[in-house]
Image 1 (cartoon, rainbow, N blue to C red):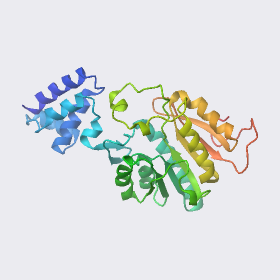
Image 2: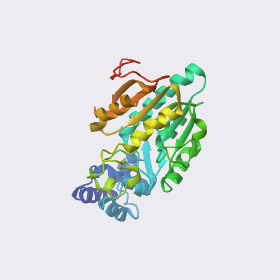
Image 3: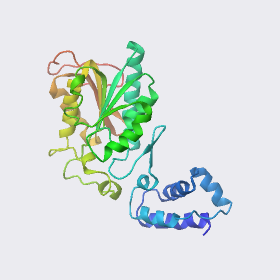
Image 4: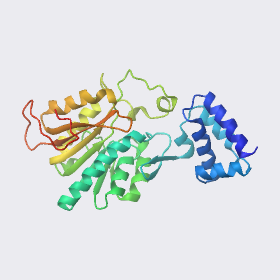
Amino acid sequence: MELEQALRTAVGELREAGVPSPRADAELLAAHLLSVSRGRVLALALAGAPAPEGFQELVARRAQRIPLQHLTGVAYFRHLELAVGPGVFIPRPETELLAQLAIDRAREVLAGQGGVRVVDLGTGSGAIAAAVASEVPGAEVFAVEISEQAYPWALRNTAPHGVTLVAEDLRTALARHHGTFDLVVSNPPYIPPGAIPRDPEVRDHDPELALYGGGPDGLDLPRAVIAAGVRLLAPGGYLALEHAEVQAGPMQGLFAESGRWQGIHGHRDLNDADRVTAAYLAETAVPAGSTWKNGPRDRTL
C-alpha cells in the first residue's frame, strides 16, 4: 500500500477508536518507523512512497489506546527527547510551565550567588530535572524517585545532564541535605481516589503510583512535598508545586496553614488553568493573615 493511502486508512481507524489526534498520531507512527521527521512523511506520501513495514500493526495497537509514546518510546518535553515506556508517567505539555518557573528561579539564584541547588521530588521520567540541568548550566540538580519501574527511565533521561538521581521516598529523601537547597520543584500524584481518569491512555497505562495522591482529597503527597520543602530548603528558598486546576484554592490553603511560607502565589498554564502554586520559605513562622509580595504576578494569601 502506498503511504498516502495507508495514512488515510490509519486516520479513519484511529478516529473511530476515539484517539484525540488521529492524523498527527498516524503521521508520527509512520515517522517513527521510517526514522524521519513528520514533515518528511508528508513529502514521501506526496511522492508515492510505500508505507513502512509494520505500519498497520502499529496503528492497530494505537487504536487499542496504547499511548503513542509507548509505541515510539519517545516523549517530547521542552527541547528534550525523553525515553519513556510502561511503568513511567508520560510527561504532559502543561508541566512545561512548572519547568519554566524552576528554570527562571534557578537562573536568578545562580546569577545572584554564583551557584544554585535544585531538587525535583517524584521525578518520574526525569523530565523536569533534565530540563533544569540542561537549561541552567552550573546548577546542581538532584532528582528523587521511589518507583522501581520509573527509576530506570529517570536514570536514562537525567544521567546525560549530570543530575544526581536517588531512589528514595520524597517524604524522607536527602536526609543529609536538610536546609541546603535553593529550589524544590515537584509534580506529585494528586488525583483523588474516586476521580478515575477518563482517557484509556492514562487510566490503563500510566502507573497508579504516579496518579493518585492519597487521602480523600488526593493531597496527601502534595502535603508531603510542602513539608519536604520546609525540611530541604534554605530560608528564602523557592518551592513550586503542580496540581489540578480545581485544587488551586486548597493548595494555597495548605501552604498558608503550615505557617512557614511567604509570597504564596498561583500560576496559570497556556490553557489559562490554575496549574502551579509557588512560595518562598520564611526564616521564621509567618503570622496568620500576613502577606508578602515578591512580584507583579503574585496572588498573595
